[in-house]
Amino acid sequence: MAWSATVLTLFPDMFPGPLGLSLAGDALKRGAWSLDAYDIRTHGLGRHRAVDDTPAGGGAGMVIRADVLAAAIDAVAPEGDARPRLLMSPRGRPLNQSRVRELAAGPGAIIVCGRFEGVDERVIEGRRLEEVSIGDYVLSGGEIAALVTMDACVRLLPGVMGKDASGEDESFEGGLLEYPHYTRPREWEGRSIPDVLLSGDHGRVAKWRRAESERITRERRPDLLR
Ligand code: ADE
Image (cartoon, protein in one colour):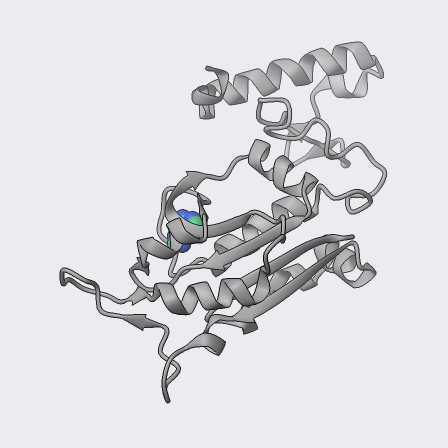
């Protein structure tokens, strides 16, 4: 079975969005993975198909109802569906390459996109949702975070990246940020390609790249070295 993502959202038209193009889009068309966007409002209540209500205890914004969201989750993830259930949320555990690798190695993911002020806490507990953040900033909803998460996973699926080794020494996979890249022309606006890269000495090139990776990581992300 191909890696399969089911996204629960109030904006199903946002999918596949950019994931219908380029690398992920080609893989999607080939059936290397699948994407279903499911409208939470299908389970909304009453004539207006309401999915949210005012927060208990007062305050601004609206909260997605537990009963509505649970019904949507149960409709797409029957008993025995082994896929992890993610809830995209700025208060989640930060997504990193190690979690991405685990997700990509599994059967897929059920991804719930939050909107409004949040989701009733009881559905997070009752349906064992894993809250995931893509960074310390606030988006207007979880949809773009879901796209980011799926993009990171899909590019790791077998056959998606092609047979080059471009997945191997890129940023994070080795715990360091990537070294600088160059291509022709050899000289551009007075700037040259570092001599070592034109030396043909693969050992020296590898050493230089390693040193540059360490320098850039030390400057920009010292937290990665600890
Ligand atoms: N929804 C809103 N902001 C988010 C973030 N930073 N990560 C994941 N989901 C979000």
